[in-house]
Image 1 (cartoon, rainbow, N blue to C red):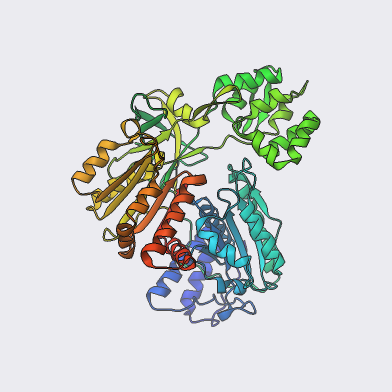
Image 2: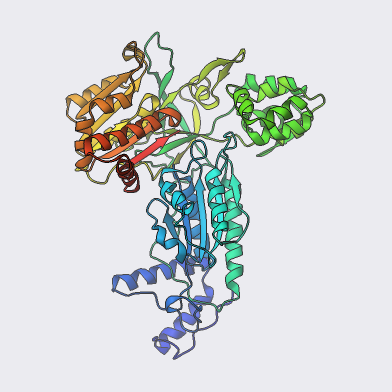
Length: 608
């Protein structure tokens, strides 16, 4: 890349400085230049400087203060941190290209900023049944309300994250994309919708966005690039990640439920020694599992295919059996799969089912891909045509149940094993039974750390913590309490629920010990099947409403982990009712209060 020389006398540099810079600048790579800019900007700020000074010999872009390029706003809304990770990669890629960029979290974004945006890149996930993530709720509502501004001067691009097994796939991203366009915004490129295995699509979108923005700015005069200190992407602490998982040795597996329980929960301890992987309480562990080989063989039988034949899967060529075993999602029925299969089957009944959403949802419940093959067989179906309909087998995420400071070089999990019978056949959870049945102690499991910045302990021990985690939702709170104990304690309150006290009180001895030594101030439990009328954690919250409200008034942080479809909604409404009854607030003000807790990161959820 040709860098024009600095002209003597065109800036505050001495002739000797100009000569030295003209000797070194042409030898630098873009990455080295980016680092140097960040370093100089940091020095400038330390000395009380304002905006960074453009390099001599560069022209200013019209319409920007001080000649700086208007930064690209990379706006993200993320429940677990995946969206934030993609936003960070985009911001870094833009800056490497010499384009200023600022990451902005929807949870703290000021809505009045929207009309000032010139270039807006949105990365947002969809949560539950088409809902925005918690951090995006307020902006989503504002954007779709009457006060949303006209955006004729805004160019935008949207990356939507979702899961094709859900009916409202990427709905939040679609909402943002549609509304930004309705308000007059100009699309830089068409929206991209990503499934659970989003890496390749997200990387392609990032490259396209950077190229498009660079093109639109190329006509302008070259301007100095202003880099903030620390703008370069940090080097990863470990070489192991989602694409290159670490083989963690299984140290121990303990069944947590007592004899006679109708649930199956296992505690697992894995060795991370030598991996360089680090995590904090609230993070998740990604597990790269394989499929059940018996299920694989059943699919091959239904296809009437040779298991040894070479085919092409999402990750490359291998035998049909290996591709189905290691590469493909072969249980969950996604709507794209079903639509594609309907074309191959040419079945009127299947097409009629696809046309009736209510009947389709009813049919899908409890069924898997093997049911599609057996219900609507396609004679002579080529294995490669079938594989083309399948998505890549995604890793499964489990909330980490340990503090790394309490267990150096280890990571612990609390896994609810899925087994049930539906429509005349026994069903198994892909990853939970992989962990419980198919990996022996001292064998290895491919893992990586999935950082969740939206589910973290408060910085200060002076801040009280309230934790609501029924079932395996207890996992991150074991990590929270271990960490708080090492830090010195603080005020901690746990709500836990499950079916039966005698058989399902997960980690009972540990909670009782923490309660005895004062690390836990309160433990309130709800065992739903131990009495005639079912009892849940939200009922215990109601019983302790006065004290719970007092803790919130002290500044307590409120955390929920577990089932999103019912429990999390019930707990949310219970919290609103407590604010209304104990705080003397109107229904509207109570709702606003809880939303403010979320906005202030005092109410955080890890729900699924």
